[in-house]
Length: 245
Image 1 (spheres, rainbow, N blue to C red):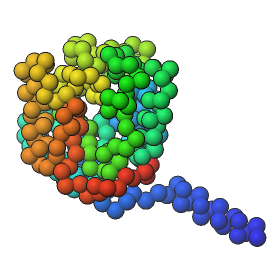
Image 2: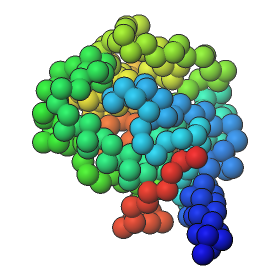
Image 3: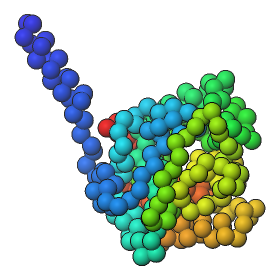
């Protein structure tokens, strides 16, 4: 009996640590080896201020069809010494659950100054910034920007020295990307892709990203210049929860 229990324990342990990635997913660098990753939810540089549940390694999973389409965007950018930079792609459901728990803890405003300086945290659900499901969990949604090549190294995020994400590029966090008018995950109307309050140059930068992404099959979320979903998703009704490790 003891031997059977031991065998069960060993099998359970192996299965727990040797998780299989679902068929149809790839790690993005298998398709685009030179893409730049800035995986914010693996770190504390995000609106929670802590690493997010489900992110355990510097890997970026996405559906194969979405990766193939991104490769075409990267090919065009490469000609002009530019590159895509990904902030997030596949997002485990447990990470979304973490967002929801955080949003309900109204006293936790650790990163309010940088990410949602003009919004009361109690409004995050009502205003649509946080939801119980995310298209990211279906595997064909990506948050990204454009970076000049060669790219500059970024400073380490200092949680004790935050700056409002909607301020000018000279004031906010020194992201090494092309200036899009706000930082990533900035909960502010200036993040709306077609906001006319930003300068013509910033609108042109957003238009470059949006036009290339749309050319190769993605659609933009109007409220977030960085957020794109493949129109013909591989898994339009499936929300995955495998850990990124």
